[in-house]
View 1 (tube, rainbow, N blue to C red):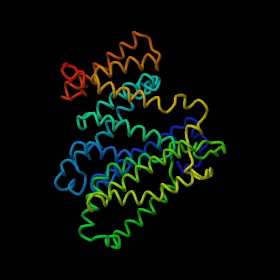
View 2 (view 1 turned 120 degrees about the horizontal axis):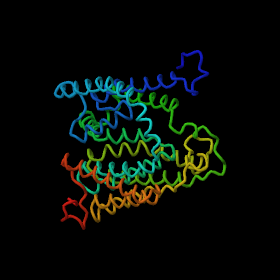
View 3 (view 1 turned 180 degrees about the vertical axis):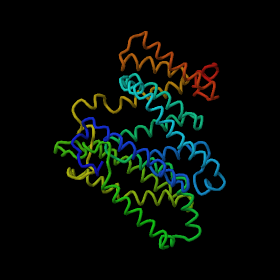
Length: 374
């Protein structure tokens, strides 16, 4: 697109403006697989999700992918190649039917997405704590998006934490703190700093247009400052907890917290002094067009939290049934017949999925002895 002489029709229906970025977007996935599979370092946000899925099913990415698990590596490569061919053909055939999905109101899709995500999260450890962690991380992601904090960076750090801690412990055992003076480590640190600097300057965020807008002097800083302070409290708790662990047990969280804390203190200082020209000062809810955020931030938290509380009390299936009925009635404003049909379809899908895949549902305190509560 950058080499095209005539750009006047871009944004007005010119198909080249769609083909070029989509082709580049798909082409990068093959390159992103190389560091993901060989080194366990995700090459993109989607690769971080892919790496997380591998961890959940017990596959550890790394050099073993080209030795012990070479067959799995070839399976991934051929799957990607075949998927591109089949995907292109299916997209040409199903483009029109798929495009009609965009006409479905989000209020009709949201409850199905919430229930399926919750059901999938429970399967990781078969523990209700998985659902509470899903809620906590969901709220964290909600505020990170609102205040312009990088969610892919958080996800990549979360996925790589276990491997990074393991390799850091080994390096400390072999070389001690003198490892930071080794040429290879210094080169890697320098390349990391350079890449972070240039990636930050060229970042294209989904809310880039809002970030470029001038900020109003009357903009409230309180919500963002409170969020930053809460993150700071967790960092301090990490430092205190790491100090109580053994050396190898606490060196990784302590190092991460001590490296991150100065940057967080800088953000807090900017917010506390209302440096409105600074890029760290951003609140999508206040800077967006009027009417964009029609519901308060805590409303989705109450809906999802209510589903989890009911699942803990009466079991997931009865809770999902009540959640569907309540959401369709109160938020989607559907009639009773449509509400009952959508609820029946959603519950039937969950039961069929659980039966054929031999999956479990959160039983609940009051429903543990009933067949559909197991």
